[in-house]
Length: 93
Image 1: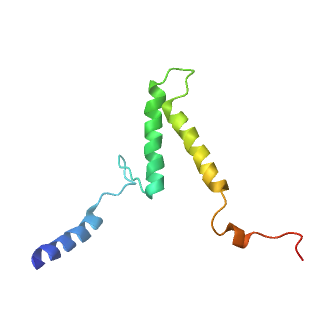
Image 2: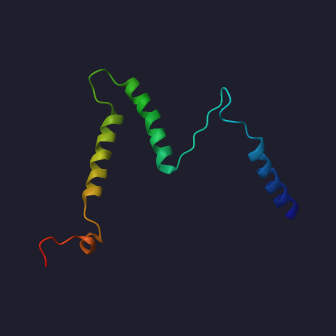
Image 3: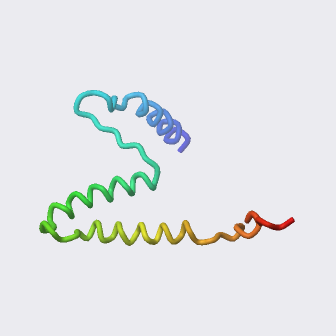
């Protein structure tokens, strides 16, 4: 069992060294956190949805995006738990 763990650690270290350079011709690298990867996937989905939607109609991708922006705006404008503590009191002396 110890040999398997040691070999696994050595191979994983070598894998980081042997990986191809993403800057070479024909290679691609996508590096993102969870939110960035979700946005990337949404973009690809949006391209497909827009390609299938007839001219003057709003695609399901943009309908969903509009709803998401409305919800994010509501959350951002909603007062938080600590907002009363840090609220400035103008006119109070």
